[in-house]
Image (tube, rainbow, N blue to C red):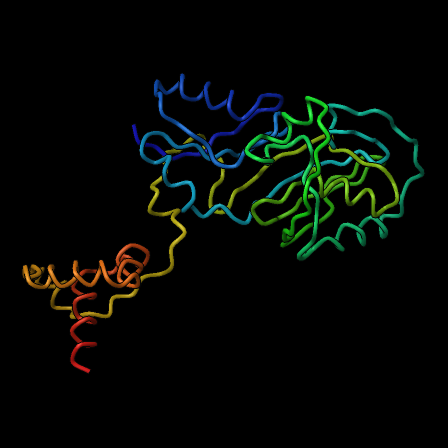
Length: 274
């Protein structure tokens, strides 16, 4: 079965375990997902079966939209509610200060991924190393926050919605917001609302062609080739194959732009006649 669709992962289950549930429900063996969600998180998860699992790298998956709640004053090794070690009582912040600090994270920012994350270090997931109490150093990365806003502030809980680039860690973002306020912080809630063009619609089957991240195509050849359905001659095909092997730009035209072979042939002839 070849199928592309979006599921909604519930709280407190790993993405892998939830995928196994979905595969059993559909009666398939080959399946995968794109964009790991922490067990603590819920929300949209792109799933593919069969040959469609090869398309993940070519899908429109950005920007991503998340909703999160930060527990101001809470300190956690995992940056969420799993390992809160202490909670410091705090006075309420002014709403204007909260808004100013949250909005200051809009744009390109640097952040350090959580140690308890799926990011790989020398081929091993960071969370596996962290759970073995190994001393690991997470390297700083650059990400982009396209938009971010406060959705609610009921002290000490601060809720935000953020539209971010791929690879952004919302737990790190939440902790960094708390640190900029001068306090500890940990997430108590995390939901992925959208991944680029993908939203949850009751696991509706999606046409991959509508979600591929390719540039708009233009046809610049002889329109009669389309209207009359003219077949390419053997020598034309031989010429295309020959040049295809020699020049990578033809491969880019054929595969990335998806224009007709007659268009490629037209431009080759035109170039030769110059």
